[in-house]
Each structure stands twice: as structure tokens, then as C-alpha cells.
Image (cartoon, rainbow, N blue to C red):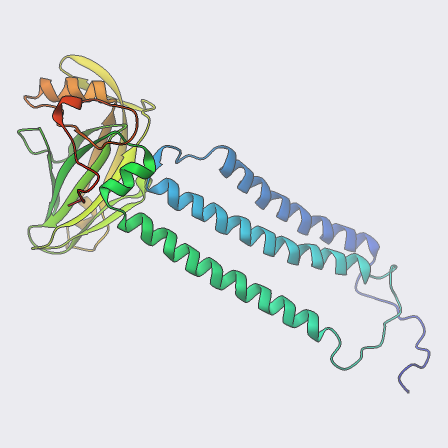
Length: 303
């Protein structure tokens, strides 16, 4: 049969218009659920006021939106093809010509590659800037008016926290203030460990003979827990510390809990335990506690 001859109608035995409508609705419903989840994540972010995890989540939402736009376009094309070329709508096959659709294919492939490579470079740069930001840069970016220093030492299989202004080390439980840039250094007394707080987006190796520095910030206390501060019960939020590096048979038991309280409650707790709230001013934000303690200048770096 020569190209262009009359072909006549061809019956599609695999389904009918109702089946096409059903599967089109399934595709569109699935896509709608993804967009609904994305909108919920934007309107009600669980990480609001928490850094650096908030930056990481914002980037993830950007990636999710990119995937939804690209994937949603593909789903829309699939649904269009299902209705446009389904039985009962188009039952006469059209002849194909050599190279048909080649230009559209190249445009699509180049567009996908551009999105992928742009996402890779932007993502790597964003995460690197977050991880490598000095305390001064972090305080300026967040608007934190005060900071508090802390040393974290790991050992098989426990954590030791030495917070500035406190005379004693803390272990299974450490109390820290909110609205304060917590700047910490990690090291290890034996093997390699990794200090990790999933809810805050923190993972920092603890290596023998080496000090690694990082920071985090909690902006608001919701009061999911309570602690005693000099006979007074104050609200606190809890964050679990884990070891993210396999370090021996006690690895799974290497846990600690950070209790974050308001700055005023922290001052009360510190004095009740024989210490002081050793806040240092950063020069950013609007005032804060412990202004008499002095602070770092903008020229000073982190640990």
C-alpha cells in the first residue's frame, strides 16, 4: 500500500472513551495531590525560625516546585494524548514522516538538561554557603543579636557539652537559649563521631585532635516540654542529638537531648545552677540579653 492511500477506520479494541476518562482523572488527581502537599509545605513550614534547616527546606521546596512543573507538564501531555488519540476521538491513524518531531525532541532534551544542571550548581552553592557561613555571617543573615559558645566532645559512647558561663559539663541533657546564635565546636576523645541534630539540619564530624565549628539558631519556643529553673517550671522545646557516624557497639545509645528555653528562662536556669548567661553581642538584630557582656566585632570570625 503506497503512502497516502486511504486507510479507513481502525477500531481500537483496548478500550473506549470511558476508560480514557478514568485514567486521565487518575493522572490528574495524583498531580493535584502533589501540588496540594507542596502548598501545605509553603503555607505551614514546620521549620520556621530554625536555622540552618530552614534554608535547606526552602531549597528543597524550590526543587519540589521545579519537579512539579516539569513532571506536571509531562502528566498534562500524557492526559492530552490519551484524550486526543483515544478510541472514539481519533480512530484513523495518521501517516508519519521521517524526522517528524525531531526539533521538538531536541528542544525538550536541552530544556531538561538546562534545568538539571542549573539545579545542581545552585543547590551545591546554596548548601555550601549555609555550611561554611561564619558566625558573623550567620548572625547578619538571621538577624541574631546575641551568641553563646559551646564545646562538644564526643567519646565512646557519650556526649559532653561545655557551655560558656556554666561551671559544670552537661551530658545527657543540655539547656540552651532561644533567639541566640549557638556557636559550637566538636572534637572527639577517641574515634570519629558525628554530631547530628536532624530537626535543625546539623551534622558535624567530631574528629580526634581536630576542632570543627558550626552554628544553629532556634527563634521561638513552643513549650512542648518543661524544665525546672530554680524552683520555677519553664517551657522548653527538645531536640535530639545523635551520632551519625558508626563508632562501635554503643553507637545506637549515643544520645543526648537539647532543651531550648527563652533567654529570660535561661538566665534564671543558669544562675540557679551556679553559672551565668554568657551572652555575647553580635552587633546585628535589635538589642538582646546580656548587653553588658560585650560582643564580637564584625571583623571577628568564628571558631
